Length: 301
Image 1: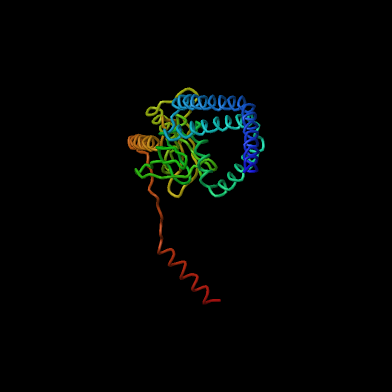
Image 2 (image 1 turned 30 degrees about the vertical axis):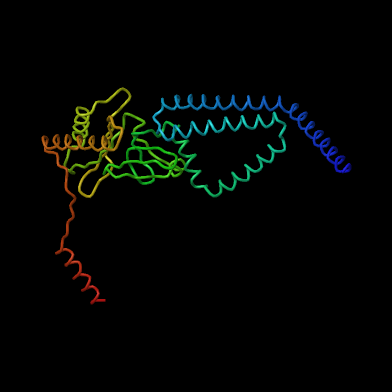
């Protein structure tokens, strides 16, 4: 009985000693823990503030709501992550922090390899959201398609072509490829090709064409109307006339050409200037004579 009592007392003493050590360790650890909690709390509030500030800045840009939200969340996540790392370093959990970073690195590598295409489109979407060369309602031409930009999200760009059909293009194909934006400049140079008959007075045709274009399309300072004959065609002497118009999409260019063709045709009709049809002459009698001649020469040989 006495031995059991002694064993119990020893156990209690050992337990008390262990508890005392824990209390002392916790008392020494408590200031660092409080500082770490304060730091982490401060970074959480800081992350919320920076996320709201980011949204306000992005609202000034013509971006999709989904893109603005994901960017603000990414920034919030980065700020909180920095706060966690600082709090762990204050608690002297260096080994745990190193292990966490190593695990995160391996995990990120595995996830990155598995989602390589998706992540590429995501980062490309973020890049396209910030560059001024692609904005909503711009008319762009890329990857064989041409249309108005309706949406820029983290996976793709949605454009509406002139035939009212929608085309979805992955962001990476645009960010890594080439595209043409018709809406970045208000003024566009139109190139119109035509031809006149060989009997025409070329100097008069040139002057009449320039006058017609000048009367229908206003030219600003530094802009010029160019006219040049390009070739002796099969049925006409061909030329190109280049002039400036207000155009931010393909429809504006199409209507400018439409107006120019009507005006030039009307002016040519008033001055009896001929725009020839393509002509092909087939002289069957001559061909027959040449065939018979060749046949006779072959017999003589």
